[in-house]
Amino acid sequence: MSRRGPRGAEDRLRRLLVMLPWLMERGEVPVAEAADHFGLSENDVARDLELAAMCGLPPFVDEMIDVFIDDGMIWVGVPRLFTRPLRLNSVEAWELLAAGRAAMQLPGADPDGPLGRGLDKLARALGEDDTNRIRVELERPESADRLADAIAAAERLRIDYWSASRDEVTERSIVPRQLFTDRGEWYVSADDDRSGEVRTFRIDRIESVESTGETGVAGDGALPTPGEWFVDADIPRAIVRLAPDALWIVERYPFDAVGEPDADGWVEATLPVASLRWFVRTMLRLGPGAEIVEPADLADAVREAARSVLARYRS
Image (cartoon, rainbow, N blue to C red):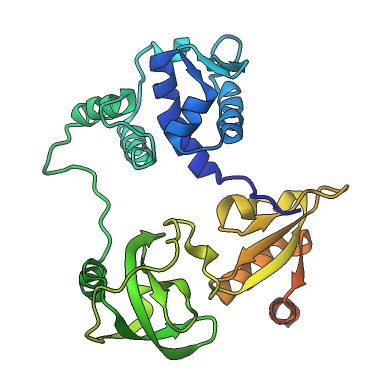
């Protein structure tokens, strides 16, 4: 039986940066209320707080974060390490400010809450103002504005799109519905006439955009959540068995499902393969800690790459 695997460590850390100040300000909160506020399941809240309860400063005698759950209630105290002035060098302070602002983009984050107020104080201490404020800027593709206009008008477009997995350009009729960025790239989710489903397209692979003259087209199907767009069926999948020391791959990269561990701790994971080069290099890096179950062509590509590397090593 498949289940959703562990959330990435980076995501859990950002969530705790938001959750802990919110809980400390309240002291006592029902688990269900915290889960609803932060858009998590109650089990995820409990697991994250169990992790936080093991965090502190050496020698870990009385410097742990005081948090526990009892009878459906979360109890949080303010540890002594949070009551003393925090001494940071300039690099650490800027890193904390950037990480905190990234965390503030998560559901449940309150700009006027304790984390937001703390970040404002840190920014002032660093001498930040409107002229030197930390910003994240991404290069905007030329077609992004055209696609945004199409979203506003519910317009049907005709595009030429290059598929990296098949190395071919196809003509598609789409109704753009959502623009977003992920890992530094721009994407558009759209109703795709060719598949009859909502698909996600990387904007820099759209070679041309042409209006069909049809507007006011009703949306069809649920939109993917930005950051989870790898559910797109247009991306090939690989089923891989992973050893316990190879499970970092599902902490770091997108996945569809992770099975229950067997007696030796191995699990079977389903991974989207957006890039053949990435997949081959990752499998070579995992070495004997990964076994490709299917498809056969991806397993063949990895074996061929391994033979090539071995031949170069022996020559």
